[in-house]
Length: 234
Image (tube, rainbow, N blue to C red; front, side):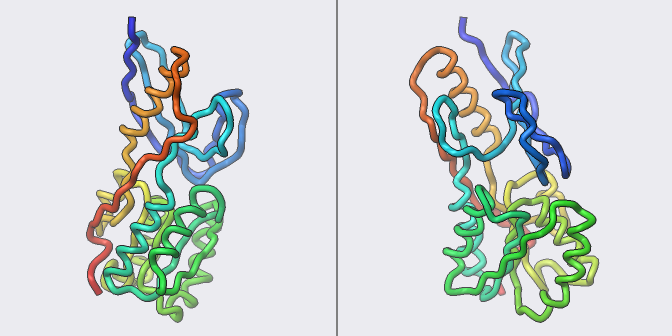
């Protein structure tokens, strides 16, 4: 009998949530924001798996989205809107965030791209933003690309608290297309990743591994730009 799986839910953990290596239940560190997917089959069996980044290795399917292209689409759109100077914000410059920023920089050329490596805790980030705010005002930056909706919305609220208008004074693009990005004021332009497709592909890989069938060791899923009210033509 073929076992059917369905997506039960997905949710983001808050800051400093623990990640576990599902192969060995080994804590591999703290993170700013991790999405966990819960899938359940018709026999009541449940599997949780985290969104993450792994180097290629045997017997593990590296199922990722096209991080570089997501950043590229954001940079290209800002350039089309007429921006000349942009800021990228991330809490690191490795793995998926590195790819997103590299894609952005390539597409935004010949525009100038600045990069801030922000702290991992909210209290430290608020101090960081306060300290960097005078520099931002002098920089001529008119566009901000954040490597996640979480950081984009947090920074947008900080700027609004300083009296900066979005998108009139500065424009924002995030990454993920989570529910908060659609409900923010203004609604956030972002890079959409299809969580349902990702879960469906993961299930197909799990079933292929279980049944001894061939499966791809590396799968890259597409992303797309979603245009909302946090961006506009200059």
